Amino acid sequence: MSGALLVENELHHEYWRKKNGTTTIAISGGSAATGHGFENCIDENAGSTFKIANSTQAVITITFPTGLAMNGFCIYGHNLTKTQGITIHYDNDTSGDVDTDFEDAGSIYTNTYKPADNLYKPFGAMWTDGNLTVRRLKITTVGWTTESYISIMSAGMWVTSGIKISAPFTPPSFTPYEATIKRNNNGNPLLSDTRKVPQKLNIKLNNFEESELEDTTDVAFTTKINGEQKAFSMIEYLGYYMPRFPFFVMYTQGVSGESDSLIAEDRNRLYYCTIDRSLRQPSYSSPTLLNWNINAIGYIE
Image 1 (spheres, helix red, strand yellow):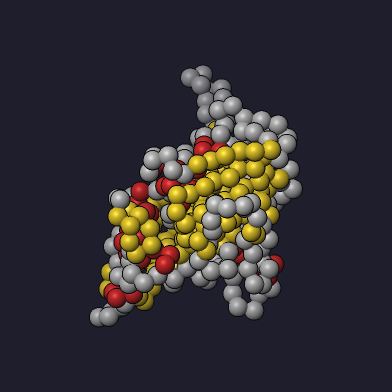
Image 2: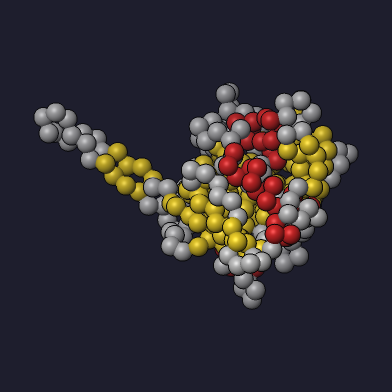
């Protein structure tokens, strides 16, 4: 099964890390609830949330100082049901309305995105229109109430080259939980504590030549790192972002021969991850080929 990685959150990096005031967020129609502005869901902090002040649709327009390469997004930490979601439109300039849908040739996705069920699992999309240049995003709430929220939203480039999750691992179908039974000093039971169990994943990039890992011609890796704007190699790009920031793992992109609906269903099976302890370096598995085994801890909801 061929997966994908979303490691660079352009929304977070452009708004929070640069701190130069050139990326703007404007809300029209409805409004954000006090203390729950949209910037809360792009701060990489799962403890802060974006909510709306009333049930009127809120339209959030994010304007970047320059065009950014994007081919998808993902959301983790939400209480949206399968009748609630967001619409996303984009523009490659700042003139006129932001009204272009993200769609692909096979109509796998439209510009409206909702979770597949009511289990609060991550949801998102990898657009297959190619690597789009995005100057503005327009995000509209759909069917939200004042109790609806999102805590993490990421948008950027899904990396798709040679990425697989190696067995054994738990597929992203249902979050396992563990219960802790506590007692007081007299042995009487207290309220039990139930928490979700994170899953250990081994993400593998297999059978790469060194020149492929160090190639700088892929537009997916053109970004700014530590103030330097250039086309980075895959090993520089993943090696910088994965140890420093949470990231998303797509379980499978879908396979040739599947219907559009099945491919869309496959791409909604996602983990929200951090590196487990440290990021290992690629190692030679033969005199000419490298394997890169990446240990991660993933959350399903």
